[in-house]
Length: 424
Image (tube, rainbow, N blue to C red; front, side):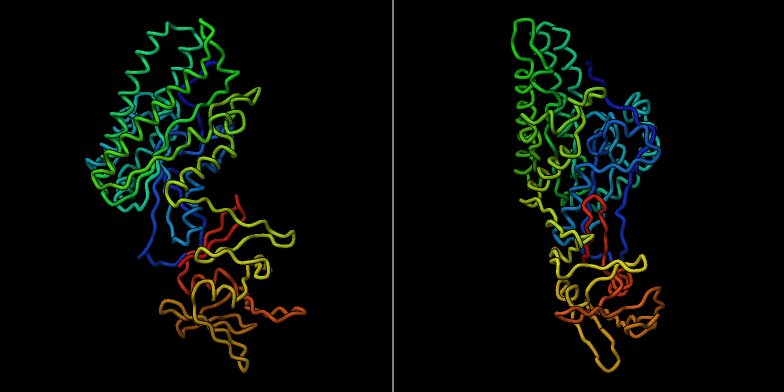
């Protein structure tokens, strides 16, 4: 097989993707994530170009979920472009830094619109990129794979080793220069943002890499190059950190080593591809999360009768606090949600009314009523609160969407992990 610069994609999620959520208008304390880079940031998988409106689920989406797991009220914007090189990234960030609002795709990177038909639309959002970077709490980056792709074909063609060595050395220098310049462009827009950038993984197995004319292992040669990339990137992070910036490396390459067949689509006979599988993207998300928070959280296994998990302010509710779906509305147990969110709770037996107070706002639900009160004002309800009795106790269930609006909570449902996040 031969390696191309990047897949062609007819359609994909918007460049500035947002979470599926019900949230209030509160903006203070918002944790903002910006993902920028190549097709790995876009979350590309082979075959996605044949889907009318694909919904990627890549490493960046998992980083977003990890922020929610940590109890952070989070916004997420994804600026992943298929086929983007380090030079293209730096050109794009230069445009953002200079205030350019609508650079042509070829001004950013020649021919990129033939790789990613969304390119013109994405680059037209450069003013939005600038604004998002200036407000970002965290910037995650993947870049460089498209710079090194020709190396695989050089080895396949048994090019003279000295020539290949010289080419690799030159591309390593270019990579390091472009990446440092790109990171400095981000930091000039926002010196307080944390930046986490991934190194490179090998998208080929030892068997498929084959041997060179002298019988040596191409995989071993490629792996030496991968290590050099990591060393260059780590050096850049160390320099920027010594200057007071918060820049880290996500060690994706080490995590993928020896697992290329499982973590990429390279062994997928019929449509071999260098991009990660869902397992691979999960591993990437884990490495980013480890660099950012030092852990990688996943929802606990659910009993068969529990359809979704609920995480409130970073605390996952147990099976006894399971939500209930009734009349296409998700209900949550009042007491468990209130305790997890740190809210004050009152119950009136006389009026059968539950009052929840949080952060200066108060909502009151009367069992069976088609309205609730928000700070004393009546607000219509589509579905009322109800009581559910079991052998052990009686629980009050409140409609989640209405509760979140009333208390100005951010509620995000992530279908990939069947989890609802509720954050202040």
